Image (cartoon, rainbow, N blue to C red; front, side, top):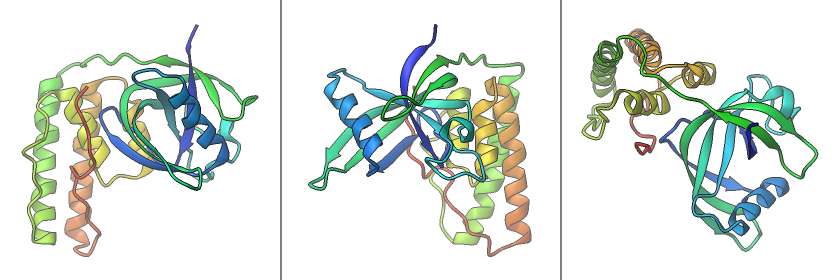
Length: 221
């Protein structure tokens, strides 16, 4: 039997180790946060699942939400005078939504946490992803006239894969596929392909908006 977990559908993909600040204003999700705080546990958590393209948050939640998401740990919460919350969360581990319960004020799901094997050739895939990222970084440095700080990039292949996935300039559908990828080696291989594609796009379109691939906060698990 799966674990029961509150679910928050969002227009973003959360990865393990990624920090995600949220302003909670909708009544049902204010209730979700308050229930987590009232539970009195050390690490209150909920599930974040991305909304499929073409849907809005809150629209047909059962059908619009992807089934693979990420557990988010509530690390900080500030209740504002108007009853809304500003919260800080950190992604912890991937999950699969097995069944969704819409009978409560907010969504609750039965979830299964997903294991992640390293996969075949993980070190080679890591090297390829880093090489693709280096070319991406150099091109971005040329465009912006600044240097991206990569000193904090992790060495562990799985943590590296999530850090690159969280910070890359990728479409939501690509990010969701990266989250769903079952092993680390395959994710790193996909990342290398995406980074090479982004580098080629920036070369062809010098005015393409650029963002720091490592700007998104993350913490190794």
